Length: 137
Image (cartoon, rainbow, N blue to C red; front, side):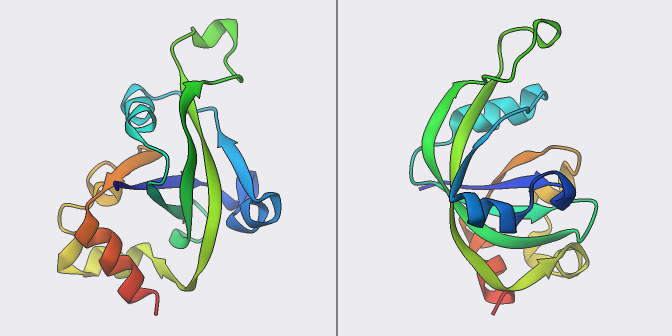
């Protein structure tokens, strides 16, 4: 199993909405690096759900329920080489883990959320994933 982090502004698509919907197609990614991360996801991989802009915190855990497929939201202007995955809500964190806490913790010195902060989909090392779970208790 691999681990990932996806970012969403809660005003655009919040964790609570994913929980209500049960699952969603993660579409609209228009960064080649993030697209490649989507393509590397496999069914069953766990995904940290991060609220960006407002909140700036990891709030839940999702799971990849469908591996990469052509993004149905692509327009002619976007080109045709974009991908999406389907994410299923697994569980909310007991306590959200904020960006300030993450930045202050030496366990996250190589965390892609910090190193490549503009990417909306990044890989997460297993030890980083486990550390988030510890901080969330």
